Image (cartoon, rainbow, N blue to C red; front, side):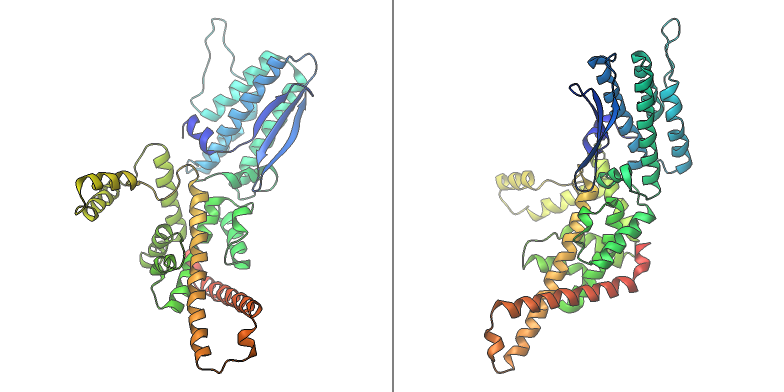
Length: 390
């Protein structure tokens, strides 16, 4: 289980607040494109501002704890479901101090956070507020459960903004369908799809795009990204690694994605997953700069630190997805470059005509045709190699 500090930094969840002017308990939650909000409760005048503010803080903490069971699944879904099932009982019948002030505290973070919320409601003593809060907790528990099943409708859509260390087959299928409709993945970043699942599908389509670009360029699939980088700046390291692992090592897309995400999350928690690889990377860097003067060596080492992860540990799944989609775009770029060269060679053999001097309209049509051809070829390759998606 991650620390509360890590949850506050990396998990966007339902956030509750008290509007003292309208005397409303409000809740907002993240979506794929922004935030949604609604009024959770209308508070009676008998509830003071101080009393109204405390439940909002405890509700937000409980939301973090609930969504942490989704973001960091324990590996046994039954345990998580039992854990979520006791939340409502804890809110409505919390552990209270006994006659001498002793309090039974649960080691389970979700259950104990629910008891804390229940104790606050007990102190406020407003039945209408308690009923409204219980309804809110029920909505949040239901959202987590549905997200775990791959259903990101309603409030469960907030899962699309989280970096989960798992990938629902339902969500992978949804992301794969988006990429089938548009192999460049233009809609994937704004779609209500779990980012980790989107990465699994995007890794599969990246390999398909790399194979198509490599066939056109006469290069290897893993080598197309460095070549595309000579045309314009593109992501190289992450797409190359993903393609090599899927094609050369035969690893499934899900394993490759989860390995990268786990390394990034571990880094955010101060842990190095593969210290031998980090040491080897450091040794390689020192070898490359060994011939530089000593003062320049120190400067280069400071400016090029050895990394324990290739991803941004603050947003690993979203960062990986951006790398993968950039890799697909660089494959299209290289494909178009070689397609243009072939057309130029054909034009050299023909007499110039009026269409040759027609300007940008013909060039634009040609570019559109290249994108369509690339999409058709990538779609065909992805379909023929769909077993890599498992």
